[in-house]
Amino acid sequence: MKYLPINNEVFTKNRKNFVLRLKPCSIAIFNANDEFPRSGDQSFLFKQNPDFFYLTGIDQEQSILILFPECPNPLYKEVLFLRQTNEHIAIWEGHKYTKEEAKLASGIKNVYWLSEFDVILQTIINYAEHIYINTNENDRYVHAVPYRDLRVFESLRAKYPLHKYERSALILRDLRVVKSATEIDLTKKACEITRDAFIRVLKFTQPGVTEYEIEAEITHEFLRQRATGHAYNPIIASGKNAIVLHYVDNNQVCKDGDVILFDFGAEYANYNADMSRSVPVNGRFTKRQRDVYDAVLRVMRAATKMIVAGTVLNDYHEEVGKIMTDELIGLGLLTKHDVAKQDPNVPAYKKYFMHGTSHHLGLDVHDFASRYKSFEVGNILTCEPGIYIAAEGLGIRIENNILITADGNIDLMADIPVEAEHIEEIMNG
Image (spheres, rainbow, N blue to C red):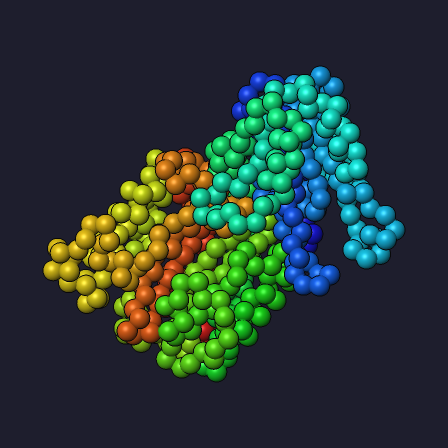
């Protein structure tokens, strides 16, 4: 891992909070993510299962966690299983956790090699009544390939058909959304790295550079500061490319007079930043570009004020839509007549602002959370309104990451340039 060590107290606390919500006489089993084949004998870079990392701090493939708080054998109340290294693995793949390193990283005292998992599980599982399985229940996820936890579930159900199977996701959905002080600090670090990368590309961008050259500058800054890399595929969308919400080709030349929509964020210690900015290629907004930019910025600031404890996501989106509607009328993109005759299920503003304003942020960029539960203290959400005008080849999106506290909220990206004048000043400095 490139990132600095994390105090294991956060993972110890996460496990304690999790087991407190288990039914009596329960065992919970968590698996590291699969390693995904890329081609031939190559695999994609390993990315840890966020729930597994949340409970262990272990960033290594082929790892298993067992939590069995009422286990009659105290050795197995909390157990971590790791892939045992050998000379061949050390030569071809490099260093793997030792047992002592894993204990230090996770706070788990009982660490065994993966080869011992089946025997140990067999000796304890029949003393449990409930078996908790960790399934991916993020409502943005569409199941296509049976991942490791699902395969393990099928195997366990065949061996132990009379146990009662439960869903760990119901517990984790409530726990993961409320960030601890350590998680907030790691997210702040990701935001700081993202800020530095943005300022770097402001100074680099000019007519004639390519979108992929800008992407390279961002990647350089991320890796230079110990980020794992990008939190998601970066969007470097110049001109009409900004109309494509998830444009990731990043292969065009940036032209004089166009605006570039940036949407990128650093991943640090598995925690993510998610930032959007829109900047003029030549360092100066035209009047029309500036008018649209300022309209989006006003919507973002109004929306940010609503990101507080007690707000309901769907109600919030509806209120933001009303604010956006007024701005679109002011820009001449909608008329009051358009609004009066609109279909309430498909508001007129959706022609120019077709996505949601906010999503939860954390170990997943679109973090695991209920879209029907009120916002809580400790939540981190994005705020990302946008206006996309296909006829003008212009797309503007502005996005910051907002932490909810007991006293309101804190903009974790408040130090990232956002005012049009500030952006122009840096680009022409």
